[in-house]
Image (cartoon, rainbow over all chains, first blue to last red; front, side):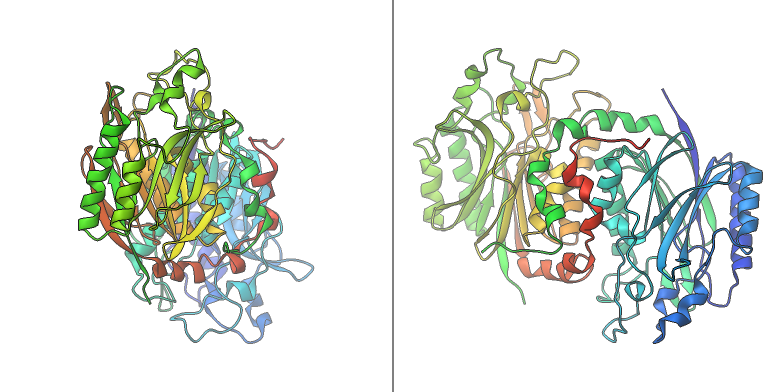
Length: 309
Length: 309
């Protein structure tokens, strides 16, 4: 049996502060047209796809960051992307900064099916970084300042012929992310990221090690839950701040089957057989036969470390 | 700051059915002498170190497997190893099949400090394989027949100047294993394994892919909990059944710092700085700041998969 979902991982090169949403949406549409020509069913764009990675900029008054947020989705600036997706008959996922009617701020992503309906929304749970200006860092990473932690859990949606979940950037380093979706039978996890090329706390941790940690986390999540993972970067130099690339697709054996070179706009298209997830789910990672939750209690009972006496 | 624990990962080559414990213990002592010469503080041997990997052999009467089990630890056959460890002033860990006074059977490992005291015992929780003879498999893997799942959780012990935990073989593929120990601040996880070189369900999954899955699981566990992992194989051809090698030491960045070549008895000795675990534990994997247990509930609430509607 095979059940193919052809996915396009659509990397965006850098977006400068001065670029408008209209300019970015035009770039996203160009990638969608390329994906369509390559017969993709589903296109995945990065985290915060519509703007620069603004959490690197400190505002004493948080409200000054509100122009980076979307108060509605779709909205007139993004509507052309929705129109093009419907015209192409293509599903899509992308990230954006969400401002709710109640005034809440989230780092969100959506899942849009081939009819143009928004079938899923995810709000980033594992926010990295810090709340206040931190002069000890090489660069600021203020996600904990501008966003609240997601409040929607890690849902999995039955759409496009499969079981699809989302997470965002730093979520991919946390095995709990994949496991909660794995326990819902997830067949494909899609995620976008904006990852600085250097660790702000440790300048010796540069591009090669950062890419290694990225690949390791994504490959382990795929293998240990026997699912596809589609990881999509925003990459390159944004106003002097460099983001790593590393857009890639990992199969349910944890193997990288395609990886995009470079830091510009571009796509990789991979026909993903969702039935290839079955072997792992029915043998070594048959959770019902092998998991021993009576010994996992600490994972949900405590947040931080409690050392033994 | 640095806090060095010099560990010897002591791989055992194959042990045939006909070999006695006395012969195996002599091999283990030879490796310990080599480790001592290389100034190791702590030597780690594989899973089921004292015998062949007997769960590959089917006995209709389970009790026929009892000769592979140890009813006491230490016992006269293993005492020379304990004596040598005390003489060397070296800590050690090894795996063995445990038969309790109550008649329970476990796949266990122990942690022995430099004074010769058994300070920790672990009983394997994630038993792979199956209970009954399975003619669809290329080889039998009857751990679920001969052992009960471990009943001691995943403790971490304060010993040898650090926080040390244990797991065994298939446990290393489950992120819950490392996380439960990570939540106790573990600085080094030691584990032994006996892993067939071919997947019994899928002959196309051979040595290279099996080693890849092994490394991936161990490296991810180390990185995501910022701890050292010392993984030690029983390797080579046991009565016509091949076990892969892959003895290695991984640092808290998830990088393999040493890996043993070949499938014979041998050691790699690595000075492990337990303070190198601090950076990860205090930044990206500062659990208290970043984990969101309110969204992890399924991990401990359900064993198997529950698909969405």
